[in-house]
View 1 (cartoon, rainbow, N blue to C red):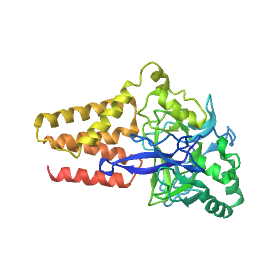
View 2: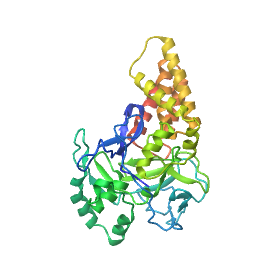
View 3: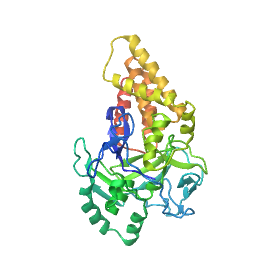
View 4: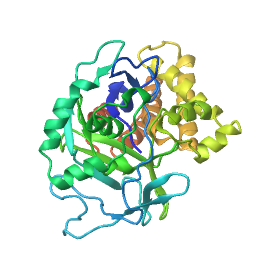
Length: 372
């Protein structure tokens, strides 16, 4: 399963990347325009639906590994040999998904994929959304340039149609159901990445590399042999009912451990994390001269780190590390500030990420070191 997932920098000073979704709701959707919504602390609108992708044979083996995307192609290591780290299999209650064929350390590159097609987004209409019909011509032109096998890959991807889209162009429907961003103003289709399922405590993160022109999926913790490889489609700091309401737009009911725990009242921590992130990030730019106020902020930031780590919300931990570093510096605890800043940078660099967010974190850490 996949959706139109757009990555944009969220609070760059906080060194965090927030997932943005193109959403599709009756109160938002007008005449083929799909408004922009988001994952994380901002939620403009709910996302559009997607359904399980059943197009590949359940026994197909897919290959990949840790490699430099500038010099090594899909599915090969530095010696040009196949390096299988996952397979696509039938998942109980989920249809197809990716399963690790061996234990994968944190930071392992699962997929390092260039877009099959990448086209510019049309001008967004404020309060309405993107007029997707304007993309049909660009899509058709790009599709015509693909080889027959690439066109087959494209058409094999899932397409979901809303009742209002009965006559919508097939290429556009597939694209809208599966595309990710490819930079600030473009979106692209990644046939392999489109196979990855959702989990409310995902074991993988992802980012777009402007330098290499590829989207990278990487493990954000150790993934055991036989474990499903997952990403998140939605904001994670919501109660289970709200998450399932959002995920219902994709045509499935999430049965992950976090959702099961949420049914039993286990969502209090996630809601608390969301509230704490919003509150503490709002105080970064407002410096208090009262020592007791700043000391409380340090304590709250450290507690936030612990909550996020205990809950396994790796998508949010770099933000918490940064907050702990900022507030530790504010009270003069420079050793602690550097410790937290190093953790932030290590998290952002986990998959060898040289993103703008990682570079900002590196500059921040260097400034703290200069003040030793």
